[in-house]
Image (cartoon, rainbow over all chains, first blue to last red; front, side, top):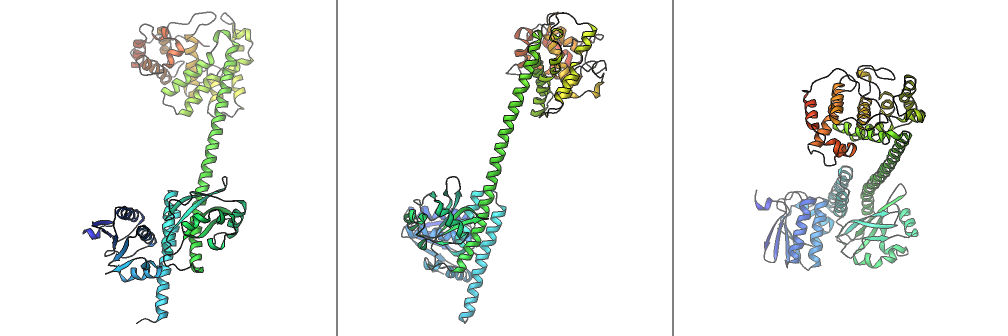
Length: 106
Length: 428
């Protein structure tokens, strides 16, 4: 298993933190990712990148977790970036208005 | 390239799949999860995630304190009140709304929205959904704005309503469980009180029986204690042990109808008097039978505590297996106390003599396993196996330290002591 396949794997790169959403964001893994992001933001991280390269589907719990990350970041002036999203997930995020709060990268 | 209609249909399909997925997960969560806190926390995730709502929380209503107590929240901030009071008007309005979301902006006439205006605004709460099931206010859901920034549509409100119903069910289940626990605790307390009253009454009766006979003062209480110790040594359950104690306390209750001068006779009673005295087990049974005892065998112990395994006992001359087990225990406890306490016409018998006598009568008057249990209990205490030393309290230190007692008991338990011809042990 590569590190990008690991659910909730977090990698810090200076002021940037990369989070790998993995194949399924459930409450347990999601809440720990959210906690980790909050801590990184508190430590001065300016950009949170959530990588969806291995994510097939994001359900409601996943959305709630991502909104939590967005909320924490916006409260501290940090930026949230979603990367390597599949078309279905982009469509869902657009429909829900989440893309208004994040940058989308390939 | 897709036409706008096709795109709209596809978007609606995605939305439907997403929200119904959340609804299905919520239904599963409410019906399967064991932890209420966990269920509510997940419910908040699912509700917020279904419509991408930025923040929200769930509160449980306390009808006693007239408060909404927050049980789960996301993004509302630390300053959001943990408890929100409701006045009668608020409660009426919340109940009238049922599960339909109230727009905070349009509900400022209600005292609740006036009092908590600042908190709701600071936390950007735009909707309050009263959780009402079967006309009962169970709580409320507070929701912030959607990630899209668009106002809530009637479709959104329908979804919120459906999901809130599930959360309401979870709270109702929890309330029901809490009520059941409360009633069970109340019943347990009542039962304990009744049991204490029963035990106190039994002890009072035992004291009353013993008062009738100045020479055997404390006899019933001691028989109760010995019966309890023997039952415990036999490995009986806590309830059964208590039952054995009560049976011992009340075994002589029939004596309250026997003339005092006969019970107190400072001489060996004659045949006629003996017949009169031997009526007390039957009388005791008649007194105890109509009472609903929390333990089995109490009346039978009174009736048959003078029966013997060899059929030479009274009142019915029963043999071994015909005699209820509890009566065999009380029989030994009764005889043991009679032998180890002073009587009007004799001093108590020496310990070694008593145990040898009991051993000789094992299988004739006394049940072997019951005698074994008594011997084991006393030997165990002599060997330091009991901190409370109940036998020493009952028999006295000097008696328990009688020379050769441990050896006598050990030999008896090993079955190596000599068996002498039948000698009838003293009856009380």
